Length: 232
Image 1 (tube, one colour):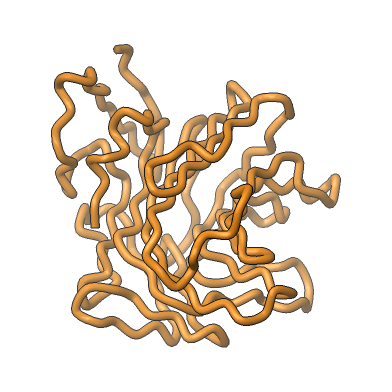
Image 2: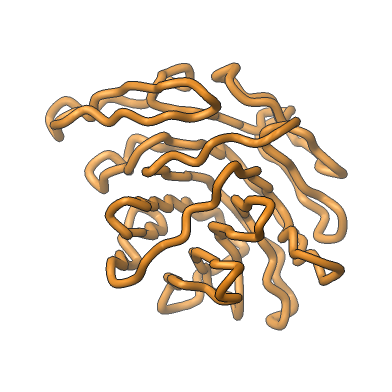
């Protein structure tokens, strides 16, 4: 399998994908992971690559707890990072969602222009989208066809390839959908935010209420064959 060469945080990360019969559990300190926030009592990155700022997030022994009104995490703690051509995210969440009119953000990766990649909840369904600020619309969006029981833990993996204009969403190791028919907008130097939506201007923040665990940034496209190795 070909090697993937990507640049993240002004450094080149090189890793090789394993064949199906060579899959091994992930090493949190592996170069194949660009950031690993396991939320075990703190918000530190166990890879030592990225800093994080938290606001009103509390931590149990194993998870991060968001209050729905002011909690968020910002990565990197200072500055931004260069968004690579290929990128994947994985996380676990269990939500409190009592108002279908709200759109709480689990994750947003946005640049100063307002271009963004987002994972959020709307009408009790999970959405993965790419927002183009100049067009003022989502140029691509995937949503779950049904509403999962948000009070239970779910594993989310989202992948996006800006060169191939392809994005995929997986829920609990099952493919929700892959889209390839639109031109994606890559945020430039970007910041990751967990827990709320950073709108341009003075608009509702769409704060997330619930728990989150084991958030990882993967510099490349995760294949479905290795999803089972991503565990809490």
